[in-house]
Image (tube, rainbow, N blue to C red; front, top):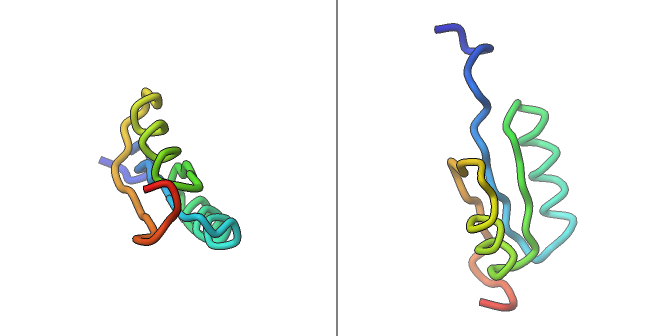
Length: 67
């Protein structure tokens, strides 16, 4: 199967630092991934529960407010 015909993996980036989120979102998007972002653990859980798209990978900061 041709790689270009495959669906892009979906990555959720979770970090309380907005600059870090933007850098990761930009870098991953430029590489061809579908990227969602969340600013804390609560937002991340809501995103995972409410998003009907499958999330393939979560990249998160270990120390964040609200979890």
